[in-house]
Amino acid sequence: MKKRILIIGACGQIGTELTAKLREKYSSHKVIASDIREGEPELMESGPFEILDATNYSAIEDIVIRHEITDVYLMAAMLSATAEKFPMKAWSLNMDSLFNVLNLAKEGKISKIFWPSSIAVFGPTTPKTNTPQRTIMEPSTVYGISKQTGERWCEYYHKKYGVDVRSVRYPGLISYKTLPGGGTTDYAVDIYHKALKHGKYICFLNAETTLPMMFMDDAINATIGIMEAPENSIKIRSSYNLAAISFDPEEITQSIQKHLPNFSIAYEPDFRQEIADSWPQSIDDSEARTDWGWKHEFSLEDMTQIMLENLKANY
Ligand code: SER
Image (cartoon, rainbow, N blue to C red; front, side):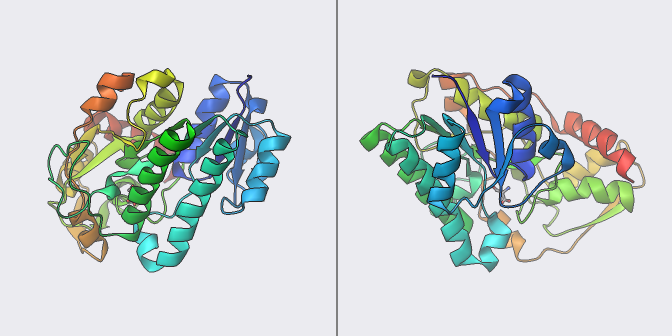
């Protein structure tokens, strides 16, 4: 069967870069972008686009049939901070969209799914450092509960119905092309913008909040890497731990100060501090590295250099 890809949530932080990368890899007309609203001109002009509500099963089904879709990347979700404000809306967006694509695969209408999980599946009782693949998982956020439940359903659909669904637990993702929205790790993107714009940043997490993070290029490589891996190399059908770097606001500040010596940071923790405190500081992702050859490339210093270099022109 010829591969034809649908990205749901293509205008978001990850979707934008994933769409560009997949269009570069396969021909553009075989990669259909979709979202609830239109995105940046670059994305809109680079290939086919459909307005799509991910919670609407028949709307997805219609696009899948019309475009003869084989692979779906489901990137639409409500992130941790926003989900705390709209719990029911988050639950229905995050779960309905997943069931929609799982059921399309169960019915044989698509053959492969990528669905992202998150470090948010872990909770305050999880071991904080080098968090194992299999461990205590008692997430205390709406977002984390939806991702953990999603993982259970992915594994269930694989075992019961043979659905080829693949997943990674993304850490906080940092990129310069599209802003993140509504996450707890978003400070690590915003800090670069504010460093260039104002020379100072007021951080909503405290100085010692170490969290697992990753530069977007690594995240995109992991995403396409797990989707292209041979089916029998994917041994975990809930979701793989995935890691690159870990740092706290103080350490990212120091890395920025190497380029902008006058940059300063102040701390005003808000409700997101509690969310961050419930998550791990570092992740053991050895199973992803062994099973399908995952390898990260970008260090904190690499990332800071690339972020400042690319954002400079905006300010
Ligand atoms: N980056 C996400 C968030 O902060 C975690 O997956 O919500």
